[in-house]
Length: 117
Image (cartoon, rainbow, N blue to C red; front, side, top):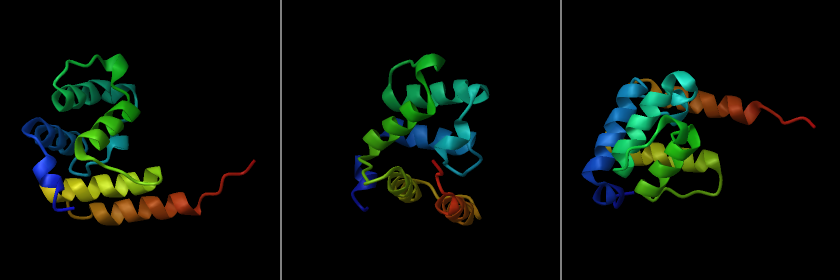
């Protein structure tokens, strides 16, 4: 984990800062889901990539993958990647008090859900 801050460029730090602003300090990319947050996603993605991104190309998945690429985030499943992403963000910006409890509760609820055929 200590190598992550050295990989973090200024545009990446600014994109993470904007993500924190747009998500009220939670740094949860999924908080930017939906049409109402399309301009926020496009702004963050444009700063992160250095290329002006239209709202139509700035979906949650595109933003998430761009952050994972920028931070070298890996994992065997999406939940592990999200945990690694938040650990990377914690190295750069502290999370708002109570965020970890929210994140753990969210994953506990996800784990409790069963997919029924």
